[in-house]
Image (tube, rainbow, N blue to C red; front, side, top):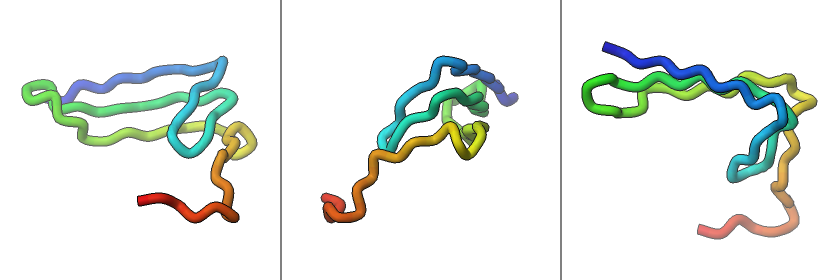
Length: 60
């Protein structure tokens, strides 16, 4: 059995590498174990803003 979850973020949300002005997130979980099977972020390309600075080397 699979549990699907649809979340709408019309006011935007932040992720580790940037933020979205607006987006819809779809996530699928195994209903018995709670294991995440898949996550998809659907948003217009213009809604994403990266906080990645290519001048600064990434840390490990």
